[in-house]
Length: 86
View 1 (spheres, rainbow, N blue to C red):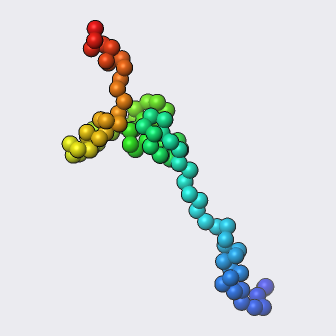
View 2 (cartoon, rainbow, N blue to C red):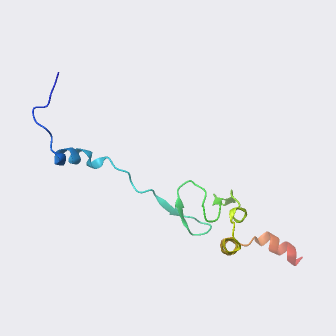
């Protein structure tokens, strides 16, 4: 059975483990609200993914102040505006 002749130092051990670490997650800009988000996930700020609303963010907001800020970020629906004018 193989047994090491000498103890490896902490420095040697740490040099070997130098490449075992977590990388920072890649963040991208949401095309809808311009906030940073993880790739291939629903945006937490606006609830959109691939130009479709997946989560209704206004529904989840609890305080009136949070609802106001979310409404400001939410874009206007052009089709609904054109229907009101007619």
